[in-house]
Length: 84
Image (cartoon, rainbow, N blue to C red; front, side, top):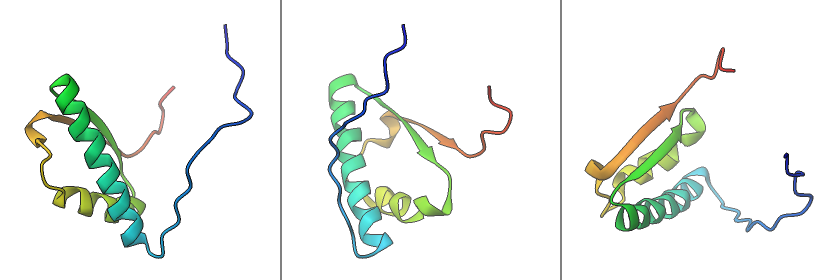
């Protein structure tokens, strides 16, 4: 049975002065989630988007300390052409 699409939701909105500041904040949050998942499950599986809009985020994520990258399985998505 299909669930109805929620008509209301609660999201935190954060606004940053620059793309770099936004990327840094997003990287910090992602790094925390990756580390927490590794601690709980022994590994993390992450899907990264591929687009110039992700450059700042990925650059800052690569600089984050304490991520055990050997325990991270990464997928880097690009095009979705011909996917059902």
